[in-house]
Length: 464
Image (cartoon, rainbow, N blue to C red; front, side):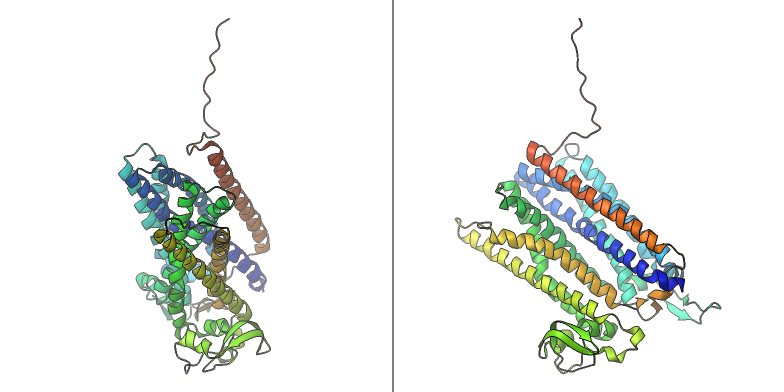
């Protein structure tokens, strides 16, 4: 009974932690590559504006990395504190990817410190190359984390023996590499990897878009907008294809999730695609059906049936309305971002052909770029909602239920309140620091600002 009382509090706390940390992790993955591009350009072209931009971005990345380290540490403790049965049962299966992710985190932290300290101290090319281990470790660490989540959606790398005397699962024949390279890992990793560049790119570009709308059209703002927006625009165009490929496997691997995403009460060939809508007593209401498109998109054939929720016991069905609406928000945001990316490509190509054309002329495109920054975060959060809520009621799909993994300890609601306060304080603090840094850079024009701990120069007085 206590486990059931804790279930919602544990779910809310985990959702808050994941939703907060995932945004920061995007910058940890993508920001080093963007810094590398502008830093390399600064060295190659002797471009001081590009070097200053790389220096500023590195300091901003350090702030985000520090906050992400705290939220990631909290998240790692929550895995054991909130879901002890998951970790005790499958610890041998999940131990390797978690250990490798920890190593990747420390490598990234070490080289970030070297990079920050290396300004005006290391030879330019060596200093630039210190970003490469940061880029690799960020990608590798993300792969390890995504391997765990993909394993929860497509469990592999173990066998189940006869239940233990206390009735718990008996995990045998553990294959850690088989668990890491499960059937869903490459699609989930690719999808998240591209999403990370979209979030980091569009959000960073949105900051400079605001500056340009306020009249700051100098080269620093143009370069600060163009580089991250280009990364994000490429990702926005290819992401729908990656997502579609991943969605095709759901009919066989997670049919209940697909049924919820498509809002299908019963299995149906030539199923419509519902725009909006909610499922009430087995009927879709307030939605707009597009005939046959549901089967065509999810099954690549209008004569293949889309699974229906009625095929599964009531206790095994995910909350269809939440999954469906989150999925549609993700798709809608993704389509809008792809259109904005294509608009940017058209404007850039036109400016190359016509020297008089300005990519940033007018305010509508800059407003669209600002909207893309917001939509990228919305798409990220709604996509993870689709992934995690769509797997319910399973914490390990088809093997262990969430209610069987939750802690038996009390006071989870108290820890939830504490986590809300902590994350709010961290978010406010990070935003305040970043805004303060930007304000000082804008006012002084100097990247290397004095710290609060700098020893002031001695004042020499003439003897009387």
